[in-house]
Length: 461
Image 1 (cartoon, helix red, strand yellow):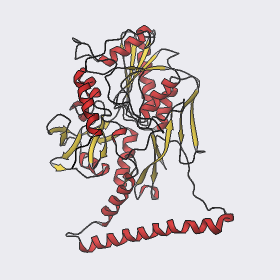
Image 2: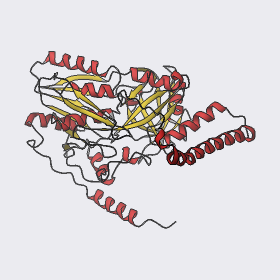
Image 3: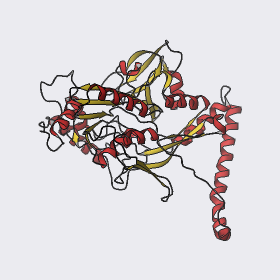
């Protein structure tokens, strides 16, 4: 049975072509196909040479798995081959319970990079951050490994200690010791803050919508007169499409939530909301940041386009592609995780590379505001060299000073973005909310200009 990450049930069938085009079209197709067979022969020749002449004995299965993974990862950052063990791990993760450290990771130029630590897991408690690089596990380098091979080194028996070597910008490499746990990922929790409810959704697995409904019902029972809801999607790396759709559906009375479009322009699938809003029309603010990706961006984009919620925070990650998990021989030979479509918000936006831009841009700290002013992309989909292209003419917002950041004297123990989300609920809209003065970023301006000059006049080599 296929498993879909950010995709609905779609079938792509390659059948025989029309016999009316046999003559010229069939002949024209011979050359590319013949070249494909020649290259497959080349692969066999190389494998044979490696088997016979490499300095040490080799494992054919590992070589072929690595070749499959290399072929798929060359397409885009989110396509890859899952060997049987990796496929089992992925299924465990989407079920919401598995053994490990609690990290969502990817690879970039052969280096394992953290997309997001999962709430209340060893990784989150240890302070690991989106954009951190993992260079070694228990002293063994993971440079050049595939995602699945790197994850294998991090997973193991609960209770065992794992040492990760972390490379972080503006910091010397350092080691972090973590203890493996059974990760029973609860992806939706809620609490009250005065008259406002805060629903935190940290990922999208098979249990997310049920957990979100139960969590909201609990706080609604404690305060039936809530005046508004904050949906916190920060550091949410995504997950299952059907859960993103059903979470969006909780707050909408109808209409489109998202559409996906495949290789064929006619291959369009639309997902619509059903009547029924669990909040009965309460005002909603959605919190996002650069760690908000994929399925989480679908929710934010749907509620923003449908004018159901105001968006507060920072521009999201920008992953607007859909992956299908295709088991091979029923999973006996693992599976392909293949990018098969792009998704579009209700207004027809593709947010690939560009991300969801907030209605009120708010940095969480003054340091974060400075980083955004110094760098155009930071860690986002646009930072991947082989990411799918954005819509023609669209680019991610360049380095700039965020509209708001904590003022001098703001208590660093408090959540400034959350406080501003509550302000939007209090005043009724982003437009009515009193603005906070733009933070100073003179150094950022100087660095940005220097970076532009460097790009325009590269140093001779």
